[in-house]
Image (tube, rainbow, N blue to C red; front, side, top):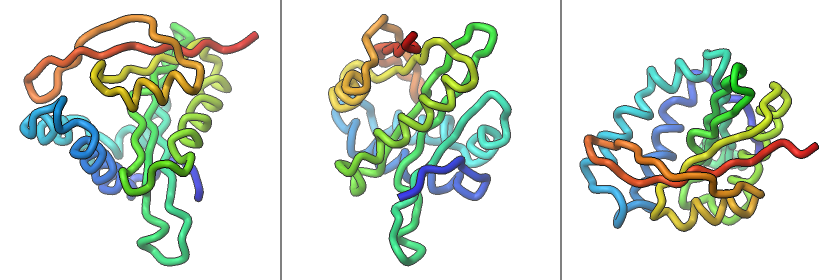
Length: 171
């Protein structure tokens, strides 16, 4: 199992993991139309490739770790951005394919993103989760993130409540 920086060639795999995760995690939260629209907007291959090349974005993937190509496929990803002026990092997205959960993959992705964000000088990291996503909420809480506010996000023309979590650098 390897967490590494994403390459341009990982764009389709990132979209696949996101799509399968959204379909599994959000059937009672997001409409089918919102899922399709959100995937088109947030995980367009050109947009993912641009994130790979951007200086202020960090995109990581975790591979399955098996012997053959299918077993080595990307099974999770984390996408973060750095706002150096505000000394803040934003963990935009973190997903592990539903078939690869329960093995610490999400934690490894989060730890890699957190370490690199703090190494870049940020003092705090924000992450947002759809408010009705209990699994995501528990995940961030288990890594020391605290709820610090509420907002709304638009996915596919619909508005959904989200909760902001914050982790600060320890002394």
